[in-house]
Structure formats: structure tokens, C-alpha cells
Length: 170
Image 1: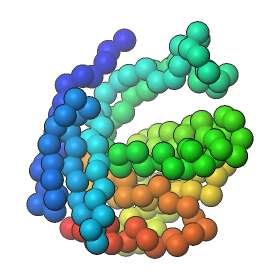
Image 2: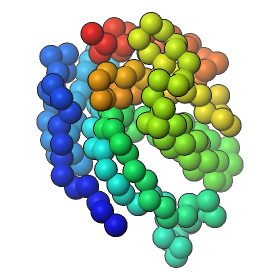
Image 3: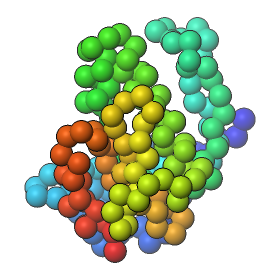
């Protein structure tokens, strides 16, 4: 099993629109500020790694089998993009939060495999919807990078993320 532990900065990093950027024990990060709200993003390197739980891991679910994942392209993802949603669904029913995260991971994999396949949501962005939950990943593709702008609830204010896209998309 090959694990990519090397930090590879994306082309053009750091970007002019970053309010801060750096590298820590988790890798490369950047922050941008919109209306005094700071969002931290993490760079995910292309490479191969194992995902899922070991068979004897405490609180392991049947669908958490360990498997190899290959990322052909690197991408930016919001730091803790789904933590509130996870907590909400987990509070509704034990295990539902994990199912939400699983849907997020499946949608992310679909985006990586077929970045241009999902519905245009605006002139520069696309949306890949979850199958079981009323959420979608809003993202844009720039050369070899995929930037996730939001994990958005599709029945709430669907345009709250648009200020982010104006700052990020050139």
C-alpha cells in the first residue's frame, strides 16, 4: 500500500485572494474572509490511501470496510465542512451522522472522477447532489484543481455561498 505523505502545493499557491495561508501538521491550508467570516480550506493531495475502519475498531459500522482510494487530482475542501450536519443527523438517530458523511464521501468521489459531469449551478460552478440527503457540493474546476465552495442544504437559502465564489473564481 502506497501512502502519499508528501505535501505538494497546488499550482499558483498561495493565491492573491487568501487572507492567510500556511502549512501545519495536517498539511497546506488557506483562509479567505467574506463579510468578516473566515473559512479555512485544506489542500488534499492526489495519491492513494486506505479509507474506512479496521474490523475491530470500536463503534465500527458494517459499511465502514477498509478499502483503497485513489485521488487522481488534488482539491481544496473546507475544514470541518460537514461537522454541524453530522452532529444534527447523529442527534436524530444513532449512525445517521455517519451515513451523511458516507454520502459526502461518495459525492466527492463522483466529482473527482467526473468533474465536468455535474449540473452547472452558476456560470462558473457546478453542483453534485447527495443521493439520500438534501445537500449538494458546490464546486468549481480550475485547471487541475477542484475547489469545494460549500456543502449546501438545497432547501435553505441556496445562494448563501455566492460571495465565496466571487472571491475565489477569477
